[in-house]
Image 1 (cartoon, rainbow, N blue to C red):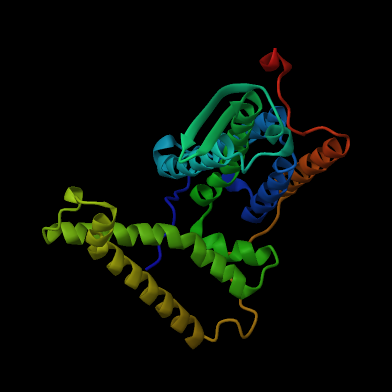
Image 2: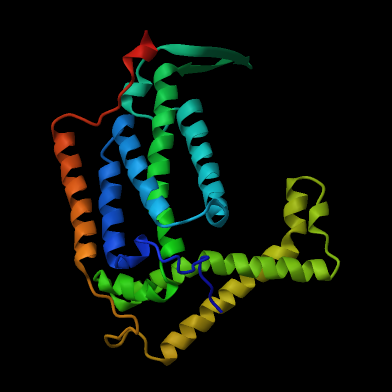
Length: 286
């Protein structure tokens, strides 16, 4: 049995918008955000997307796990790609700069050099704001969108039936896998398996997690085969299918799409005029 994210009707303004309009708006704003490396523009989009988060009436208790995962991935990206290796930085950051910390460690006749500059540190902050703006934009969707509308929404966006239903299943995969893992964990605890007392090295701990990982993985594979067989028995994909949920655009939906298109066009114009590149406050250099 498939489950979905923790959705319940909050009677918010965001839920009154057609889900197709919300997806179109989110994609347009995503393209607009990717045009900028100027933290001033990124802060504007972050404030805009946090406003959407507030209008959705979401609470920290509902979304803290999702935010925790986002913060973990963001920290790894910023620390490794920006602060340590500078692999994820742009040319203005990599060329020269004003050093804050310079470390040189001799290793077997070689010298491992690390230099942290003001430019690299400010770029890391800019990257954090950029990631948070994109995350706040899309995090609202799974918690405020009725799971019964997933397939109809993607089909209404012009996608084929097979792809629309595949995306529907993809949105349900993560919460379903989490539900199965929790059930397996409770079942193993009832049989006396103490997960909290896993000791030994890394490989030893991975080996001891087999009673949890193997059943969850096998159940996911079998569930996927059951869904595939059920769809084949019903000749899914041979003809155009109908959906129970019928979606219709309203004035509010057109307004949301128009606002997203206007922001994207304005962002493109600003980019053509030379705005939006990496910006560093002159006060930091002084």
